Image 1 (cartoon, rainbow, N blue to C red):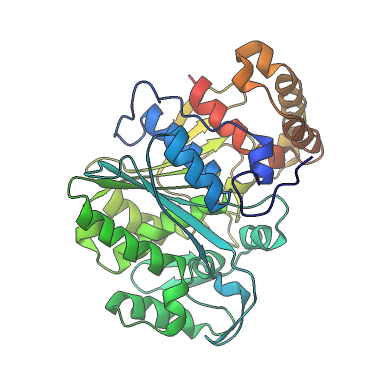
Image 2: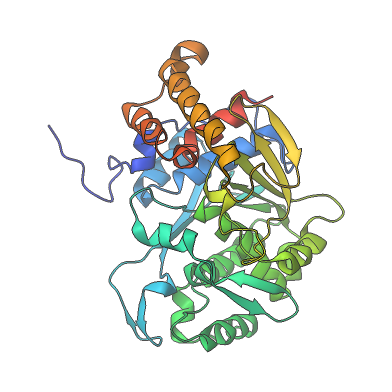
Length: 377
């Protein structure tokens, strides 16, 4: 028996064990470069799921299985892990993102995929449940934890948010700005767009990765990166938490949704994470963009907001538990009903059993999003 070594192509993440699919649905037909199209949604969701893996696994899947071109993997500092000022760090980097192109030369598509909330990473879940925010003048209030995950400030020194946002706007960087996810991705994206003159770029992510995916172009807007944003094809997120208030949403929509929508936010059924942080009279967090909501039968609706937006109320409790029972039963027979590629792993079934206690947690798992895209009506 060979024990896989962390960081190698045989070391698979928890998410990879829950859903082991790596092939694209549109491999034979090609990718339709239209925001909201099924093939592009499938590519983005698979890239979002792949972001949970290490660089060796990602390289292998992108180059060999997808026949595309892996560009790079970045392991960046999350500023919430910084100890003091901009000098001392903890040993662990917790914001991951990778970039790939549809081909190595004269590419048509560049994809940036942020890693989401790892199931057993307490820091990631603390970020999702955080309710603090920082106000960017003339733009709106932004979730402070997500700004930290992008490497754009630290709450122990609140002025660092404004300093870093302004510094990266003028390209005059403090030392730690060069280790931030925002900086390294923007820098690489600029060079890729220069190299591939006909390419447009997509930004995507699942869970926390979805929040970072929409935050990245939001900060590009703040920095007036017009030449870069002209090449933005779209943003597709899956199970994404709220990132800011109504003012922020209005600002982003006025820039990204005209003349046609480019930001699509996908929500599966009772997924807990898109209902966080709360949209109520106390916290005032708001979703924006086009919401594609899938119920437990994979039926799609285009809505302004998912049902039960704050995930509370006794009148929702019984239906949520009944749905969790249905999803467990369906998971057991998925392979027989839809084919062997849909057969759920024992880890996936265990996640659905956990969902009997916390229904919204199992609904957040990536298999629900992959199945919704591929089987949805």
